[in-house]
Image 1 (tube, rainbow, N blue to C red):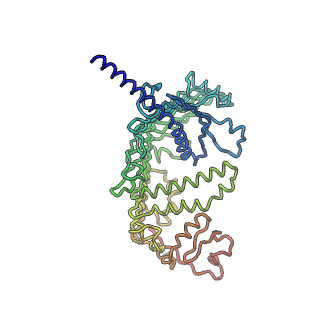
Image 2: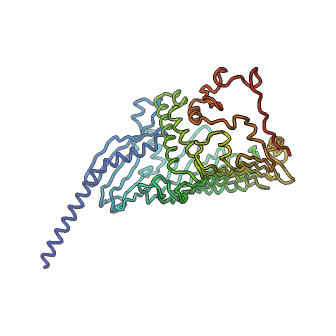
Image 3: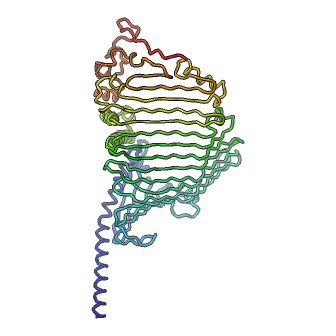
Length: 530
């Protein structure tokens, strides 16, 4: 029995070892294809900023594989010799299912580490980097690994840096305490959870009295996959920066508690909801700055923006069209065709315009607000806009139908104590005279409302629609509107688009107002005076 058991154990161990070796070989064989796929995926994201990752070499082994990646930055000013000097990255891949990585044994499909190749830098830059690293071997290390459960995780570290410079204004010193981050739960669908810590940055130049300090900041991400294949997920992303302080020649600028938060969700029908919030805490600046910082934002400020009722597939189509246009422009600039890049691509621009128009569907609403908290008072402006029609904007027949399809409100309130009286009168003089803003003993305020085509300004009806005259009920040529967005001109009501924008004096627009043969102009809307 004991001998039989021993033989059985040996056979099982042999089979396990053979199975591990076979699995390792199969996964290792697929690592090169996965390596290429990773580069292609990253290039798709980097295309809009002109970066490209190129595989320079790849050596597949049994337990590990290694490759060299070149970072290419296309430029018409760059020679072939300059391009060949591009920055290189070293990629090392450990094959699953059992990987003996520097972090210890791991079970999964792969473990990848990406580091910079210092020798690919110019000699002077390489020497400066080695000095700044102070003995650290790598400037950064990026790691990714995929588990047997299909989830992918990532981590990175950036080494602390310290360097000195000497210029015409004296000696200076900079110190960066490094950075690190982790992200887990990545999969085929958007989603993940992680945190990034960005170390403090300090700089000084004693001769000029310059000192700067950006405190350690952090980013947090917690996003779960959404219900549909087009969903961007639900959750939030948060960035927090405790303080930024800059001093020079006795003057100090100090900003506290800066944060940015992005919340995303979806309704029962799978439509996107999102909100952006940017906050600044206490702000300090010298009175000699030329702007009353303490009076306007001394106690902080908040800007919010949000939308609801957006179909994710429409957003995906718009983003794809926009990326396609941006990639084309970057490629044109890289090839030296700056004129073509500036002129644009009518076909790709038209695709952006079409997908932008498709975002306006029933149920869409937008909101924004700005709050400024001064030392003696506050100022706040808000915007609420909703598309209330039961069919897409592109199916609205006339200008009147289009305007009546929207409802919303704009409001503004500002304490008179927030600005010095002289400056307040300069800023508010025109809005007060036009009737957009009214005042009482303590504040300036204004409110504009739009509902079913009816408009009111500060509680009084405004004949806004009447000012359009007959054009209000003429059919909108949406195809021409979209096409004209690629050629600089807008279609005239009831006529074709004017590609020249009506600048040649002969095409489309007819006589200018005031010229012989020009139709009588409709009077401008009579805004109430208070």
